[in-house]
Image (cartoon, rainbow, N blue to C red; front, side, top):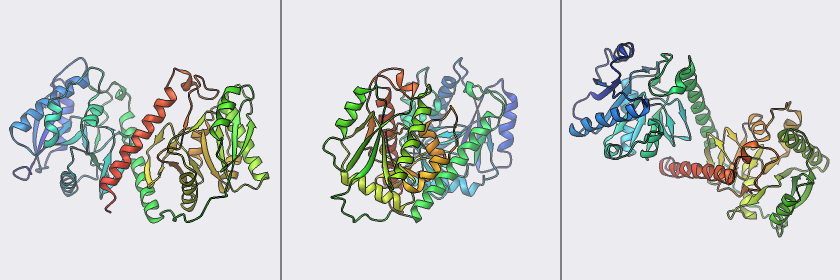
Length: 441
């Protein structure tokens, strides 16, 4: 790697920000492991563009000096109490061994992460460029790219870097100066520190979830479901005859579902009516002594991935791992992590067009207090940590051009389709990363 033992470190600073320059130089005081050089930032009316221009100038210098990697710091970087040279050096070496493009010292937001080595996490996308190690293999890709005025540096780097990682616990956060020269959203007191704390808490949760399911793998399903049917409750407003015809057609020729149409409870707020209808179904399931039920909204449609065996295998395996409910497909999953070859856990799982609910979860749903702000998918995610989403999705939502529950879905055509496509694409990227970095553990 680089000649010598010091890390080539370039600090980005606007000449008119001497307070930041003093702060960041003080951060590196007495840390001889860094070869520090302050680079005057390229100033532009669009702060992110100016920062990008500065990064490219730094990488041109690094390329000329034949560095294997460089550390680029913004002048609001601040070392955390977790920092030590051993942790940083081992993380850089581990990332380099994994053919990394980029390594972050700490992130204020991330979209998809996996623990791949001790103290090292793969990330799908991130915010937080206050302390980033960029490896040589990414230099030319950055230098040859075009930066558009509507882009941000974080997402541009996320897009260009195929292999991205961060160190955890974080060794770097951003000092809150009460303003930002790059990101306008950060011009709120304590906003940045809250972001980093929330991000750190999310990583802790992911680590805990990964460890739990590693110790509690699903039991193998060796049961024949040839003559099995599952109680299936379909929610439909009586006046929505188009939806009723559509959903009946979806289940045509599928005797594995014992279908019952449930008249939805009407309410001025559609989401309240949906939640009350779900509770109505739970009461019916208890009366019928159901052990497992499927609840469907009338815009559910099966994907080409659906099969009876695939569904029932996942129902059985998820139950063995302690799931309270299982989703057939989601328009958005917050902090997903693979827990089996065909399921993801998520901190928040959106969409309720096809959900499997186990008897052990019935009373929790009935006892949950709610008000007019209720959203069924959010409240289900909040009242249990034991949930999963089948992957690939076996269910999506059909576009009818309107929604009786979610206003977002009334903004135009293909809104719902795009949500599901983006969600499934994200899970596919995480699945590929998991297979690449975690399967040999």
